[in-house]
Image 1 (spheres, protein in one colour):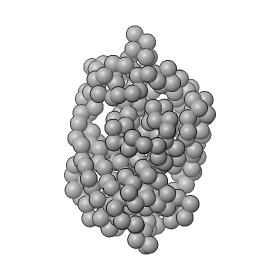
Image 2 (cartoon, rainbow, N blue to C red):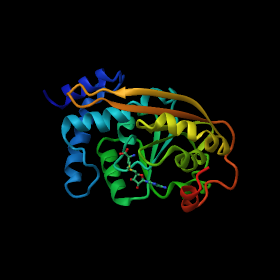
Image 3 (cartoon, rainbow, N blue to C red):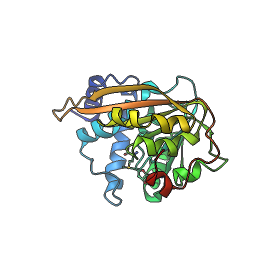
Length: 240
Ligand code: SAM
């Protein structure tokens, strides 16, 4: 079976709608990832079927939590472009900003976005600095983060970037429900309110282990108070 066949199987097994039509773009993204990864270590996951599940399908599980209208999205700690690149391939109506503090990973995101004609800009910055910068503070309708920090810390990195009325979508593993309980106070202090916690398994139709996932949706209901985000050392040492 070729890449498109495997990709279609992964989408079907995980109820992912609207991506199969773009399987050619995902095939090109995968070829670029494998090639770039020879020079710069973006990920340990490069095998075709493993990457389809752990990078592309996993990123696409966030699709159904995105608002249906055109909007702006900032992906905090995007690394090699996850979930940004898979989401941008499917949602051409959203303007994406991929933020990370590591410039060499963003070079890949820039290159892939250009090759695939995606609406993705990159921003090399620390999230807590962007959250205090008037150009980015409360400027985005959607904030995403996958595999960046524990949720109480992540709330302080991400919620200041969401505008009131927007959402923060956190993509988590098995500890997600416990992290959501722990982060309620942090979310509220930063102007957020947890509106949904969805627990599901990421299915692997190729015989790998099923993986437990939790997506937490936090609505931005009030402006973030002036003193936040704090310096990273304080956020990490004394999470809200
Ligand atoms: N989201 C990607 C994924 O799921 O493959 C990358 C995950 S990687 C484990 C975490 C990334 O978050 C790293 O690329 C790191 O540079 C970035 N990061 C961590 N804290 C950050 C911060 N405060 N500001 C910006 N980037 C940050």
